[in-house]
Length: 282
Ligand SMILES: C[C@@](CO)(OP(=O)(O)O)[C@H](O)COP(=O)(O)OP(=O)(O)OC[C@H]1O[C@@H](n2ccc(N)nc2=O)[C@H](O)[C@@H]1O
Ligand SMILES: Nc1ncnc2c1ncn2[C@@H]1O[C@H](COP(=O)(O)OP(=O)(O)O)[C@@H](O)[C@H]1O
Image 1 (cartoon, protein in one colour):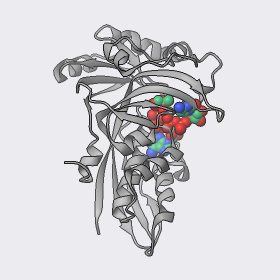
Image 2 (cartoon, rainbow, N blue to C red; image 1 turned 180 degrees about the vertical axis):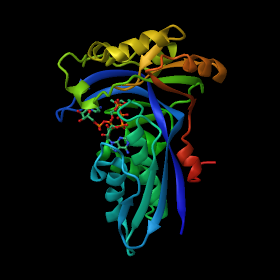
Image 3 (cartoon, rainbow, N blue to C red; image 1 turned 90 degrees about the vertical axis):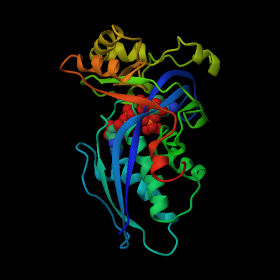
Image 4 (cartoon, rainbow, N blue to C red; image 1 turned 30 degrees about the vertical axis):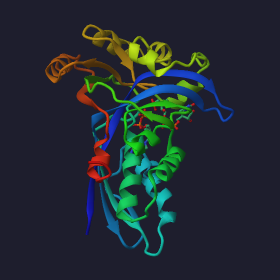
């Protein structure tokens, strides 16, 4: 029986601006999704009885709500003759609700992996559209390139960034993306910027002032990390990050972090390891 073992890389938002709000309540934004060479691992093996089995449940998440399970369910109707099922094992390394896209990346790896395992022949465009129904962050992982994003995060232009090393810290708190986007004090009308303006530097995250105010532990983590390099919030948090030119410096900073803060070091990458694992790129 064929088993696929697939990476589910994290992302950070190198900047985030909120430029408007659509009639359906979703926010229009500009961001740069930087992929990282660090993430969860997913194993998929075919079942010909049509059942989906999630071998290890995630604590605090019902199986039917797990984005891996929801992604698999969305693909089943595309199966032609044979019943398509799968055993799915998710090895979770990324903190949940961290603004580093763990659930979205798990969903994207499920979509691409099952598309191959079940021989559905769906295109990346089709999978990105299906992914968008699961979350605004899913398409970037389906397309697998570090990218400039507009719309609600689904209009993507690949960007080659310098592949720096990042220290990512996870303060001991959980931020709900919906809570921040519903908050009356969120800044919602940033002027759009051009890629060149971002590349010149100095662009931050519009959610950061509000999140710092609501979550003192995030504020504290940013202040601590700022001692070493300019630090920012990713997405709506809770993770914060800073970049470094080399791995040793990043590891040294990460190792000194306060004991109550989790953290890891990862390299920024322009192409997803998922796409390499599936042979979609060389
Ligand atoms: C804003 C970002 C930046 O990366 O935040 P993080 O989740 O990474 O922190 C993401 O695009 C989030 O993507 P994702 O986490 O997939 O969001 P979804 O599940 O689609 O939406 C969660 C909730 O956030 C709000 N939401 C999300 C994205 C967006 N562009 N506008 C919104 O208003 C909506 O209220 C929605 O109900
Ligand atoms: N496979 C999954 N991994 C992580 N979170 C999941 C998963 N499936 C569902 N979720 C739910 O999605 C929420 C957001 O997860 P996650 O993608 O890790 O955060 P963020 O969107 O902040 O990057 C979690 O709090 C959890 O309730």
